[in-house]
Length: 505
Image (cartoon, rainbow, N blue to C red; front, side):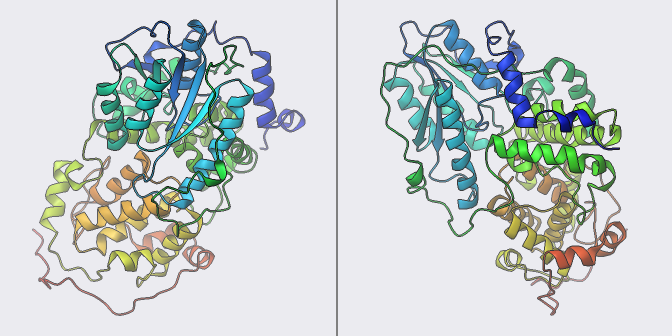
């Protein structure tokens, strides 16, 4: 069944959103902000008197509309009759992000800057470590309150903690989770074991948190300061990143690019999502992960739109909500409550014990990081997946699991496998450096959110995947051909130890 014709006859999604905001353009002050979305991380609770503005440090969610953090910052500014400022810090380096990711980011930020200008919101592009340059901005321009995004990874959490220590004592520091539908600290107050333990907690809270957004409005208060014009053309001159990995062409950056992707998903692929999303040869996924990762579109906005087709494609809509909400927010929970979210030590005791028991097992094939990166293994299917990652900045979800498990099977140690899979994913994937990516590698290599399976060599009790299993699920030859998979290494390798196989009890 095709989507209802009324959708095709009326406005496109982007025009629809604009029209809806126009109709409700004065509603922000009357809109009750759910205080559970906000954490006050300082002793100061009230906006500083006689200050010159409210600042929203935008990092994880660089978009103007459908952004609870920006909405909260504007509400503070309106209540106190102050100018509203938004800043973004271009980091000299962020984990293993490359030119591919920085270009996608900067092009979207120029869109954000233009949208802010239309709304009389001051947008500032800063260069440097946020815990230094954001702090300097607050002091220089007499900012009365600082609003920040939520990001569960260690480095962003360090920045927030450091800013909290150095911020003037009378300036409130408020954190808003605009990335998750249910704020991470509200979804659960502990590390969850699996999807089954968090699913009901999230689903029971969706009616409270999955609500329509009021629009960000044209801000009525002007700033007293003059600010330098942003030099977008040279904005990446001083970054210290790998510039050999350049942009991919299939995903257009920014909110408008995200809405376009959402529209094609709803009209062309949603109907097949439930049945075909796990087939790497089919085009049945949303493809929205780059925009989700970079925060260029709200997951809540996507779910609100997809839910309109519940009657038409019930199974697909339910499956999409499970993946985009429950599974994604489970990953957020893992990284928020587990300091070792990217290390073997972060796994469950059964998995650590099992991996240790098999770490000296003889490996039939052993590769270096360089060989993995250049797709130089003995298997055409794995090489095709790596080619897809390097070329397109993504691997199909099913293949990414297989890809990571084979890295475990063909690496000298589990530690190497985990570090290398994370490195390759972060360097090439458009949604790298993300809780979903870390949990994906930890699930494949360390059994996170999984259970123990039949014990075997190298893997121990970690779930096993193999070539024949893939052949039973999809057209492997078609996938290999599509991504130019070739057998490169034909000579078998063994570990240096050359130990005999362990006997099974």
